[in-house]
Length: 335
Image (cartoon, rainbow, N blue to C red):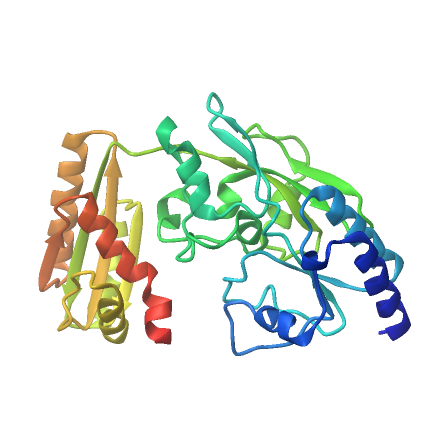
């Protein structure tokens, strides 16, 4: 990499950006050495934090002019190394691009910038009885831009799909600063499905600067079952048995003994610590009668599959508590 071009780029960025939006000192770069995959660390050439799309375009254009590569970063919660920096590349952090541009209640869609956190999407439409389905474990911190780049899922992807199934349109900024639109606000768009190609591409096809997501109606009824087993193998078979029985849970997760111990110590979720494995099976429906039948059928399948204990969450508070253990499993093990 041409160090002269790097110097020229940094000089141009210092002219363009306020001091707090361009980090070049080693101690300031240290928090950006890695994402959630902390085993792989590298200091970037510099970190830029644009405040708006205009600034971002100027940054990208300057990098293109000086032939300096870019690594894009959201909240840095990913575990796949997607935001891992390079010493020859400018790290561009999009967390300040966090506007919800518009909510369309009639079409159940929302257009927003990449720095909006996953959980903030559902919070913004909660009063409308809507929510955004993909919910990664880091949803309180991770950004929708990062979700699009990694095609994130979550505990509810078994029924409601991954990010690719819940995004209708994105705008990409290419390496020369040009902006292209993929997809549309309708569910079916003509032409090749380039939207699906871009989602999960980790920025190789462009930088996500705007997203339109699909929103769903909040289910009227929801139940959460916890089933304990004497072995991981029995729990794994039970997962297959549930699906084979024609039950489509809204969430279905399995945890082994070590994870149970760590998560219970961390979140106090009420997990049976003597179990070798547990399954969390969430069911949802629009009617009370339907949900009662689903719970009855699921309970029967789990018992036949060898469950030694079944707990049905008594209320929403207990459901949240039980899911908190699963969603906190990674930091719990990290302790």
